[in-house]
Image (tube, rainbow, N blue to C red):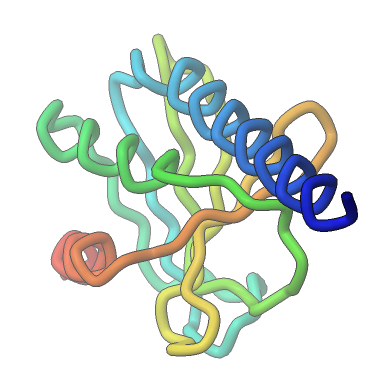
Length: 134
């Protein structure tokens, strides 16, 4: 009985997390541009060293897909290497922070309905973010 309840609990958590990722994607899918702030790289948000504006729809869609690829409740603070600001008609519709320089904790973090969530920054996302920084 305990095993069954554990399995059901895991399924419920997984389904609710997937729902949050889908909700994020629905919110940002119509993004027309993204402003990327790159921070100093020490995990803090205090120094912006570069700002890039992305309007290319292919790149925008890639970043939308990377940021919303998964969603688990955020459990740790790994620091930050930058932030993504998703725009639609000159209004910010979502902010997403990212960490990509910590091999043990590369993640996108964002807030939905007052709760913080995280999704992984995979190698492809990291490569794109580094390429855009140049």
